[in-house]
Image (cartoon, rainbow, N blue to C red; front, side, top):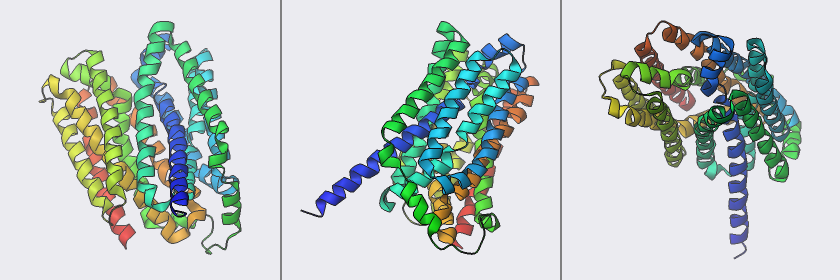
Length: 407
């Protein structure tokens, strides 16, 4: 009987940590979608083109990407919980700055503040999960982490558009700032479960391999993971910023119906992440699972890009595409963890996750500019062909990651 008590206690602790970190990650993803739904309001308010308004998200993710690569070192030095709380506070401050912005340059400043807040989440989240969750449950932990991110994406457009339509875009931005403050209060109230200060001090004092602070940059699989995130997230960036107007204008459906297609993608992604967690920890062939799932997503992208799909099938195709992309997430995170621990140990979690996941921000920074050019030129199908191309490139890089990590 005595063995059952520690086991049940460990399960409750793991579940609590996973839930708290997942909640924080959902808040981060929520702020990814605070500005894009407000693009129509911002364009009317400040007289902007698609490319101009898309540049706000480019700034968001440029700041986040550069900051994320550096935030990993701060996490390794100061501890993940402290850095995580600082990031949530900055997200809220950015939402408030957007609500008060008197001009488009100030909108860009607000985007930069939110990007700085966003930069801490992957290195902090994954450091906490790897330190605080039992190894057998890491696959499910990564699954929940991705799932809550997808739910944050799905919740933001509904929340922001509802407030904007009822009270105006400034109130919508202020409401987003309130969401950030609530998240910060929740993390602070439960800080005892996530405090990693003692673990961080112990790892900092442990003997290290003589590879230097930047030794991980010499490992090929780290760069392959970066490239995988870059191209796969560029595909999502095209849909995130321009998916509804693309479907509206290419297929002649209403904007509401086209937006439901993006919602289906996000919910399908959440379902895929939840399912992928059951497969992520099994065996050594996660790269093949990723390739198969992204292959199915690419087929859906090609069907949509061709313009031959019937309008009634748009929601289903977007949902299936999202499921394939989401399914690949937990297996991808297991591959990154393997690369980190096999070479540098747990003391380098922050810097490796920070650098590798900055590929996400890099891809999301490039996407609005690249796909915005297609939108301004009325080449709506080219956006979907670009999405399909990026997904195919992601398959190649995923297989490369698997081959290098096994070697």
